[in-house]
Image (cartoon, rainbow, N blue to C red):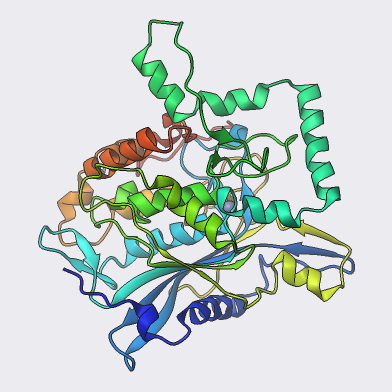
Length: 436
Ligand SMILES: [Zn+2]
């Protein structure tokens, strides 16, 4: 149906070309939102891009960055937004993927065309790729991080854990375990019986117990920080290798879109990446077509990203390094990038909800509004959701949901889910000024 040739067989040094295109795109962005370098202290970040490669033969090919994201922060559970106007997860890979979704919402037919059944598939010759300046957080980078961790950083991490245990014993695991898929399913199945033992879950918070490999993890953070429900980027990438990067919402319009390759800068460990991103899903079976377990090519680049921790360390100019609190998001066609902090446009205050003015173009509500107003031939397809909630719209994506249930039941039953009430906003009503 889509006779794509492997662009790696045609385009010379495609791995580094993808990295270069991403780094050049980042270099073109203004200073705003980029890490700050002080006399002794340096801020560092992670850069991720989604790129389209067009390749027909040796002479006819092109590489284009579609979306870019930077950052490594996410919001703790208590700060989540119930009206969909905050970006809960601002890690680079997640913002790049959301930017890609935003681009599809605005330009569904640039890289895609209708298939026989009316859903959109990529035009012949196009493939999609991701570049990330360092191995994604979570399972893919656990052993590489253990290797480079200094005694000092280990001590500080565990000191945090000790404080946490002394102050509020087991309060944070509780918030997380309440929202684990298997525990919710268990509750549903046994609503009247109280004698059911909870399932043994292969799950850890952040970097705790980093010797344990192949398990689900929430996003890293010090153990004394407030917990987040966001799954690690390794876990999200693995999920996208089954469900695609297009989202449940856009699966109403697109067939699953899989990444052809993932190019990684620092902390590259091929075995860990293969295990984390698809190896641990190899037993998954029964997925309804066209969903499948996709195995992207995993590639390594040595081209440095100037604001990566490793590149800054190599300069020898600084004595301390901190991860930047800001994120940058850019999509093909934008002149200036959007700068985010605390899940909304730069300038917003920590802990406050966003308004229609301060929200990011990538928050769920903004994307849902784009969706119901999408300019496609079959307008009825999106207009049917004008009065629906975002949660309903996702639920009605039947084949996507079937695939997701199989993935969670068979391999990822310790997945931490955001409670449904955080997705029960619709595309039109103005949210009340809530102070939650
Ligand atoms: Zn991450």
